Structure formats: structure tokens, C-alpha cells
Image (cartoon, rainbow, N blue to C red; front, side):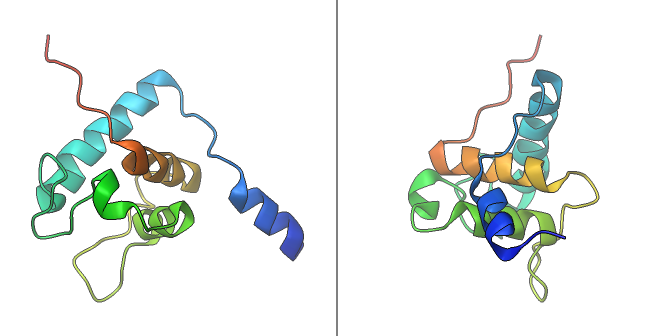
Length: 106
């Protein structure tokens, strides 16, 4: 069992980097699946914008928790069946800095 101090320290650590193929899968997930509500350019739609400007005052831990657990009573679903908590944090960190584009089709 983690102590409160250990849990706080663990939460403050940056997410471990998913490997390159998984990063590509996560970019596709966000651009396609999240984009269906948040806009294909993440500028907003049914859901709010996910741009760095729109999220500037949001803490990364809160964003990661929303991604992982969803928002009960809203259309925002939990994504925990498709990714782990570290991947949710990796996504949140990228959203705050400008989310990567999908690679060009070959």
C-alpha cells in the first residue's frame, strides 16, 4: 500500500513514454475517437475544445483522470478499457502542449 506521500510523488512523475507504435495508436484514438465529439481538429464540438489554449488552466492529473474515468452524467465516457492510467496521462500531457497530428497516409 502506498503512503500518502508516496502516492503524491508517484502522481507528480511524468508518464512513462509508450513505445512508438503505441504512441501512433494513441494519436489515432484521440484524433478519431475523441475527435468525433471534440472535433476532428480538437477545436470543440459536442465536447469542449482540447487545444492548449482551452486547457491552459487545467491540471494534467485532472485531465488524465477525466480521460481514464470519464465524467458520469455527461457524454464523456471512460477510456480505461482501451488504455492504462499512464497512457491517459501521456495523452493529457500532449493535449496541454498541442496534440500530434495523424501521420500522412501512405
